[in-house]
Length: 366
Image (cartoon, rainbow, N blue to C red; front, side):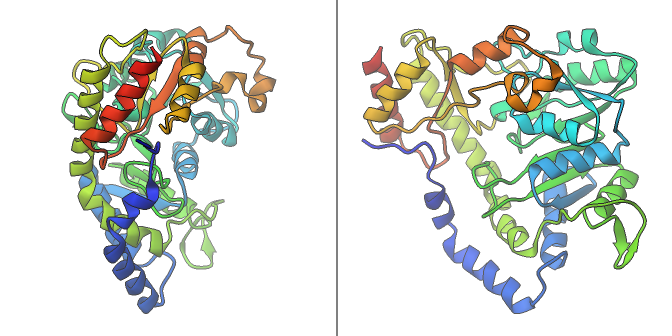
């Protein structure tokens, strides 16, 4: 049986009629930038997260950059980041002129290890940016304790984990300001690029609202140096269709993960996902590890099973960061994850037969 890694067309076809209605509504309004659709989605997304403010922006990277700028972070500052995240987390720091300071992850949960953060804090450190990787909440209670001891801001990168929790508290509510992505492949995906910033701090919300719109609250009057990074009306309308479905779809992803855990336990040298005590995952990705990763991926390809590698090269070894002078071996946990991790098909629509087909293909390899 052929099982795609992710069938975005299938996901969006489930809501085709509602998307068509949303499209017609925006077209009939004649208003395409910062109108009622954006306002309504921002209010709904803030309510979903239990925060006071959500500000729609053009994409997840901009959400991170504008959050950092709102905090006043810039040249000469340092921001703690995971060593094994997607490069966007590092790029956002670099675009402000600050320096990303990598911290290794917990080798089992793959999220930043709170016990390793303090040794990387310096007089230049301004913030900690935990990334809720693969959909699992980082250990935010422990990270918050570190931040409070050192007077540091927390900015959560919540691009993969909308709806996840730590100690029954949602991600994107621990930081003073937080960023997310609605890239089409995310659990809450737009039909194009989109992102958002969430916060309970009214002053930060006001600053991000200006920054995304040329530094302006009133047209043609610019208080600060801003950019053009606005969530457009059409994407906001589409996201408003999907948001009410998110919790149920996340729960189904958790059920799919439970089935994978059951049928893949003890197979070969597979290392299955580990969820930290008190944390939940919404399984944006279902990632396993094996020393035979590349051979397994080719075997699954031949069986019609789609997979991906998240991520094959950690940021410190990317050419883009050659100037920082890191070498292979500097962050061995991140490097080991990059060399052994493989993401299996994961979506709310996966049926038992598809899960079984993936499992049987993996079992046949080992």
